[in-house]
Length: 320
Image 1 (cartoon, one colour):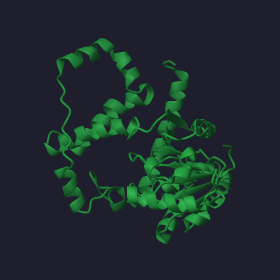
Image 2: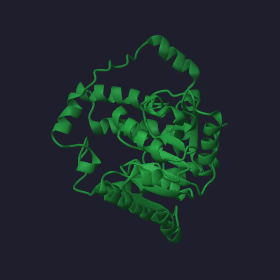
Image 3: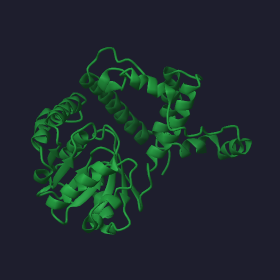
Image 4: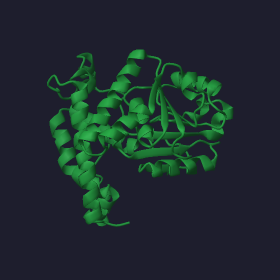
């Protein structure tokens, strides 16, 4: 798949608007669709704010920002979005029922040779797709904000043509992304499975009163993340020594938490209307700042970290 293709992004939410921006920055013409006019308007505004941040960070020049924006068109109907698309990116609600309906609408209007790529984080979407679409369907799962975080999980279905996976890997490599290829679907891929395991331990620590939200995040940021940003997990183990890891396994000093399906801590926050950044508070209170301001601060910080990590990695290469 070449740059300059027409991409339809179905869903204009927190991931959808970011995926529209990713592909527009990659040189594609993008039609971003959502059934909600308010969500479409919000998505366009979030793209504009993200572009302003990228310009302020020196990632984009101002004139190229307006050019990127001109490649994104907001549309209300799936048929209008996909009619001439080469690639359809599905980024709707993570439920089987909704996705099945959306895939049916895509099937009715998209060209037969269009690649359908689902951004699902855990669902096996292949049984939900019309049979005639399976050969050209994959999973392309991104991490927020996708215009900064480069990882994209590419997973094939049982009937996905091998050339489709190769084509999509090449497509995203040319966009300077970091695709990780899975020959078959595994729920959560790698990053989300690790994140889920960490999340279970975090909830146990919170619910049983062992540590505060601040203590947990500080432990991650200042203990794990600084090293893992350059080393990953397995190279970090190499530096510590595999005999240490071997002995730790033999000692059986760690017992993973049991999945309970709920959390009193999270339930209390949700019941209190503390849903996260979009509501102004979650585990932390964001001091009345608007989501736009919070996202901008996050993005500026991530962009600086990304640039500095790349420079460090180039100056002090660790291997492979």
